Length: 499
Image (cartoon, rainbow, N blue to C red; front, side, top):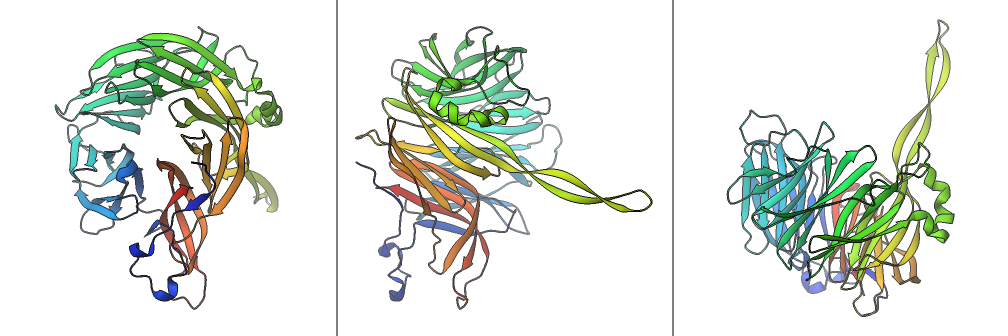
């Protein structure tokens, strides 16, 4: 299949029996839209592949607090809606999903007495439509940063007030907790998990701070009941490099893992304001043995680095997984910098009360300046890289921006990201730019309404060559004679397809 264009999938008329004859010249987009009350009750969305998607949100009620689980299929027809009451008011800490399950972790809004349940894990089975809720007391105070479901266990991490991150395993059969790395005295941070569907094993990777400029990686393999099968520690070339981040992106039938991450050259003379990493590393682990490591310093990419180095002195970067197929793994490294806005305030000094102007700075977001897209083989060898200019997008928060998909016939790699009311896409084949960056506008579900602004924009790969765009949006009616409500605040979800 040759990718030609991005389309916003539209609803067929047989799915829309309420459309009048006079409106049949309009093809409404395949879209979910929910009226929202600004800043209240956000909607959590997780994708289930070809099983559709789940929306999880709190229902506004004066009597009691209920959380709603809604499953939709791939054409946004509702499959199941379930209400889940909790004993006390709760907030969502983390959510996750795979093709068969949606799950969420919640905690009480207020402190509870010791040994009284203050934490909940909800699990929804997309096939049977069954909901399980597990409640327990979590003594450690901190921010729950991630959760993963595997077999009979949930693995989640807690970042506490001492800047330490602990990883817990909760068994849904025995209802018992276990903390990982409890015998390791060095401070550590949880990095990533990877479900090996071939061997039915769960891999976890954590970063340990051995000394001021020394870090190490520890891999752990768990079975479906949470038992530790093996541990594999290693460092990056002794004390020469420090690890900043590490992810597991691939596992094969021969029990071989591919790990990627950011590293920092400890000998590099760096400015005090410079916070980006030195480069990207890859390493394979096979049958418990650490293989050859590959290091790719950002400065070695001469063409891209020469253009970008002016902004490197005061910016940060984030490395993340984009997509893969049977032979290729694609990562991206986004470079961004905090963006401040200066404004003047008047102050009065002395008995004369003369106005004295004062300049203050306010953080307004993060300016995404450029990126580098890396394509590796399954051994961690770099095949090619593609530079990308974001034209200085300003986002409210830092998060991975690109999503992608590789066509199995042509190896065309398709990338897209959402910004405000538009979706941007480009297509690459090796170092060749098949399609430069193009954009299309996001459509409202009604031809009488337009989208004025969007925030908390998210684009995700869904299944096959389909993607999901979601955002909190403000809409307005196009015509003054229209009786619809003006200036609505909604949560909108659009289905995208590459054809």
